[in-house]
Image (cartoon, rainbow, N blue to C red; front, top):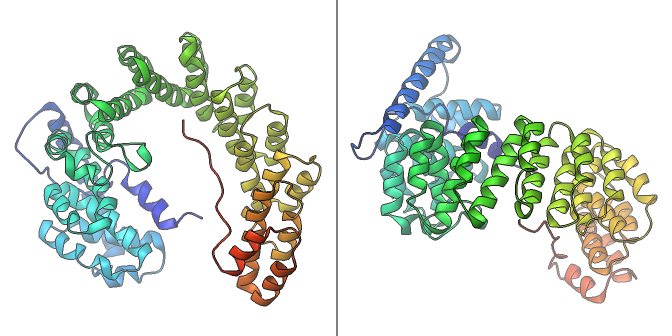
Length: 456
């Protein structure tokens, strides 16, 4: 289950911490991008001032102390209180507040950190980064926020600092020659995305000065922003690329265009060379499925078998399951895919929580095999309200030994939280668990993890 604070924070921080308003920081270089940024910030300030004036009667007695804010009822009220608290602070005051973060419980520390460093990144980004360098491992989590906040208001100077201090960002997986966590993004991509919101041409020119993975991430970010507003313009830019950079760019365009106008996106995709067409179509269908999964599913039938088609099946199954899990499950069961386990996980997760009886009835109708095994395991892992003994009985029907051991082990662990003696007795007498699995459970060494989708 995702932490609600993290979800709220992520929404608030899109575009550089939203309501945290401040003047530009860094060197005094001037450019059209910087001027545009200043115009955007002035507009934000006016809206913020207007909003504050209209609500002053309601918030005049609001606590202005960190401890009082965090003790207010309601998570949204706490976030709003922190935003108001930090938005009126200068760099010195923010540094003093940052020193208090280690005293907070983890969930509150995450919330306060993102909001505080989002504000600090606009007021004094270099000071914020210097402080992050004193935070040890925790600094890796706030540097992206600082960098995004800086780039959202002053991308030119953020880019200059990034290029001049590659090792600082490489330490968190960001920087020239490095990717973001998991290799999916880089600081270059963060800067380029924010810059492209203000001046896509300037962002594109900067991206083309980079090399390696940073160049790819930055170009992808710029093209993605362009595709959201003018897909044809993004296509023209992508046409100047080659190799993997072009393939990724086409996929990014297809994803954004597919959400905006699938028919137009499909017509463009069909004009692409065969070696990039299927990847682009899979990306477009992923977006299309969020609005019309049934129509997206019909399009999959026209794709040739392969990795891209398998990815599309998985990406469609999830959105469809949120609307009609029974129909989504029936569709997945009919597909010829090498990754049926990945696809059925997307269906059984939400179904187990919304209508567990129907989901279990459907599982019982399946023949023995990989589909039933994975559907059963996912159902058990997702249905946390079930009686552990019922879950164990169901898990014992799984034919694959590894999946069976892991699923029974997880159910036993849940049972041990309720009745350790009974759960231990079951493990000792079980004929379904391997001796190794029994030993791991009785020694409290866990039961092993589950696999996930391969990266594209």
